[in-house]
Length: 320
Ligand code: DGY
Image 1 (cartoon, helix red, strand yellow):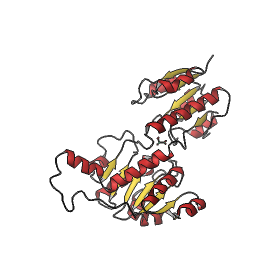
Image 2: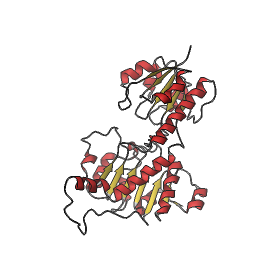
Image 3: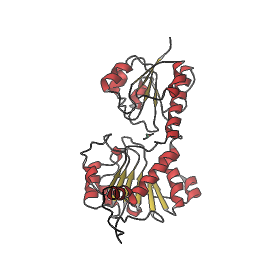
């Protein structure tokens, strides 16, 4: 008998085909709508393997029902949607999809930084709505990226990739990280600073730390107050790292200049969210890794992990 695999989101058939040789594959029928909780709970009760995406919350409640489950392959580098400790206690391995999305996510982070600095979305909307009446001396003006200071909070693979882009823009790069990266400092001339220093000196503060109990609410009122009034906050990591109420207040009262957000505490972000009412916020629907090539590469990593497990081999990229 083949082991059973439940895939929580519809994936392209050509991706799934090789898995059909080794698994009884069952899949949620939509790629855009998340699998409902009751369906997930029902499916997980009999699955040996589970393919998740970041919006599938694999809590202890889910794992308690999953009495056959041996492996979860999460199609993301972040795995805060899975209770990894509880999985480990139950002998369930978890894999993720690092590396393949580094450059694509760095592209998006830099694109969002530039779009926010120059309010590209605001300018485009003005044009489309007929509000471009003439060339205005101070119309549609933003702030410069070239030569500015970028503070990267979380200097991992994506942080380094963003820094390489920033160097092309002659930016000074400061970073804060759990551990110092001496080699990176030597190679790129970036400077390690404590968080308050980074916040006080940066024109752009880019959040790239993983979302954990320690980083939840890392950027709140106190930290936002430490930033320059001309500074821009960019978050492409996870929404919960920044306190959204404090961010709203800081943007509304012009304590900081603007924010670019690809991630939110609740996703999809509710349309009546106060942050969406502000003109100095650029928002995106969590598309950091969203290039076709990268998403296909992420799927491939999940397929390979599942194939390895089915053959009794050690899957790559285990997080537990
Ligand atoms: C990740 O991989 O963690 C992204 O947020 C989703 O691609």
